[in-house]
Length: 208
Image (cartoon, rainbow, N blue to C red; front, top):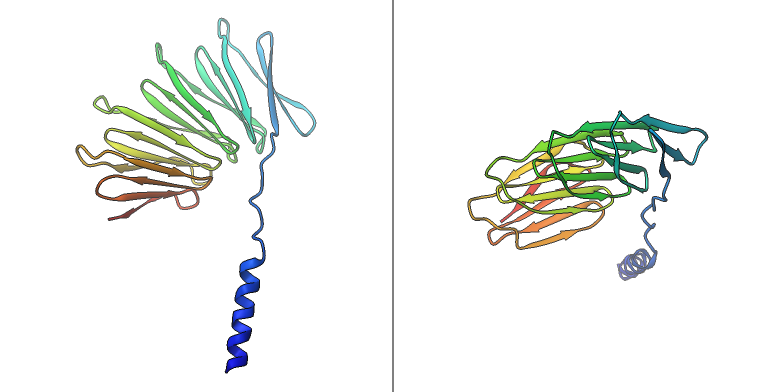
């Protein structure tokens, strides 16, 4: 019995000292450039993928990170996925103002004064969620595979893997006091509970 116990201890020590495999790092795989009335995306493979600008449309911002590229123009959002090798667009409404954006290795978030947009890099598609009239924006958090938007009424989780926005209502006067974010998990703390959102699950868990 002592031998078995010693063997178990030895195996535990060995397991605890073996380093865990490092998370795969996503290198930059996309670059974008504008030439006259066309936007070009260059990837690590052959060829250039282009999208045409409309008459009078002007490029306001270009940014690329990991699998993704974001181009904001005077009339729309253009997202490019290096994984599926295509452009995808979301039209902006007249007088809609872009307030913030976060370009991460696998996802892109864009917030305007009326809506929030999420771009899934692996799938190359946009999702959108509108803000309610009485809803006040508080904060937008993002990491490699996950993002969360906090408002006065709810929290919205977005994942590069599951797609779409996942909403969790906040109680009246409930305020998010602390946030913790890593590449795949977000933990939000209020006075009454903790809310957890994970990139692979696409649902909110609650601890009280």
